[in-house]
Length: 100
Image (cartoon, rainbow, N blue to C red; front, side):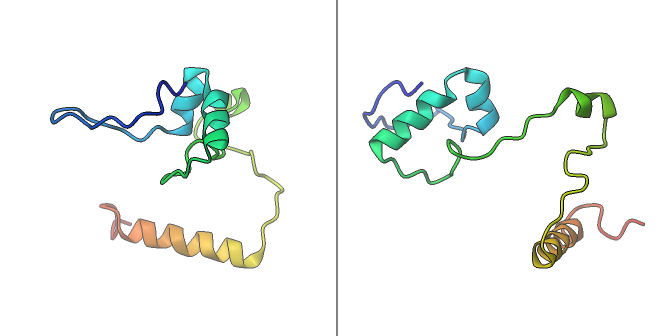
């Protein structure tokens, strides 16, 4: 839960990390962070507090590397194309590009 609203400088050898929504879920007080951000009208540079989080289901754990979560879901053609292009660009920029 947010401990303080005051600004505190980062110490020279101190390290910070942006919290992932899973961190907030595991902490048990994600709702308190959401309430505080909303009440304070806080602008988040990284939209972590109100971001969706899709945790792995028991069925997905049993299925291993395969997820059927979105089987049968339809997407618009432009969205599908955008995802495909993004995926291809990502693959081209990995260390595995060129490996067949």
